[in-house]
Image (cartoon, rainbow, N blue to C red; front, top):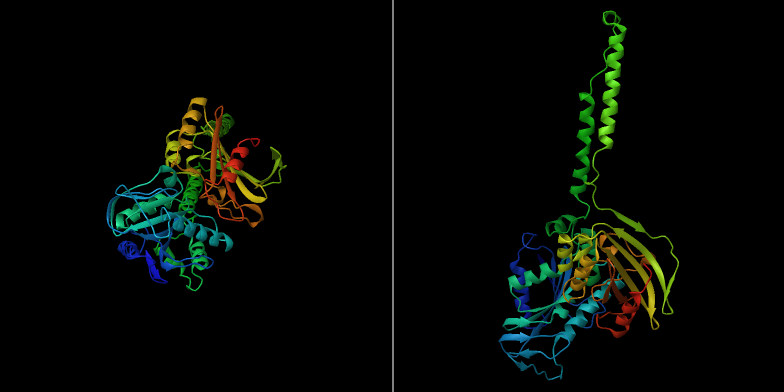
Length: 429
């Protein structure tokens, strides 16, 4: 973890945040990444204690100073905070300090979108001090990627590992692009410096090694094939014609058997497939609202396209296929982006079990294909971290819908977006 001090901490507990991040040390031995201390990105109203760019995600850390140390903190994002059972009272009348932290994280996401940074997972950490023994959060807040904790090396590390779960590692180029968006005056790092912090190209040596393994098998087989006898006239004179024909027949038969055996090899070892379609499709209309298709991606590796508890469940209960369809539409007069994921299972019972998990708070979701390198057309880069969410089951198929605003900040409990997500459940398959 490379720490860059851009300004002072915005809270007293911010000192503990910096100390916890510093304890992870340089390099990717613990988690890697870049920590921007006292960072105020352009277009963001207030500075924050830290923004941490990790190889698999980004954390916005906002410090909150409580009046006194506490044994227990009940901390809902949208409700009254209670310290050891007593309501937290602030001079400005706010029932909790979480709204400022969420606004700060939203401003960071908006900044990244405005600068054209590629989508990645953004988590929010609210660091409370001077000391809290135990924090209680609603599961709905945990599902939104929000963690409230007293900053210690272990608690921050746990939050980083839970929230920074982007499927592929961020490349050095992308890391510098994010750094430039958040801290324009900070010079970029070299590829070697970023690689030492865990930022590597997604397509690394693994694929190359797998490909080169096939080369020796092809080249080594040639010498093992029996060489045809040299046409020496003197030796042929000793062999009867029938013997020559018999040898030729045996060679031909061996070739035929080898070809047949190769054709009968089982195909079960074939890996998951991905099919991407960005061809222009006909617009859809649901309840009088038009939807413009923006591409479809079909997969057979469902766990790789999920995160959180949902990914773990899919690893143990494989689905037959996953189709992710993307649309642009409107809610009222505002533009929205819609991600529809259809998961097909072997039977209705498995689909019912998955739906119970999918509708439970804090169990993860399905990623946008942009996370696997299939960008949206027209240069759009929607980020679904705080999307409004709905799910339903039809037979052996479970549909998950995520909806966000395209031109302004999104919250998962936005009534207009929830209505749009419910309506989008009825899009044709």
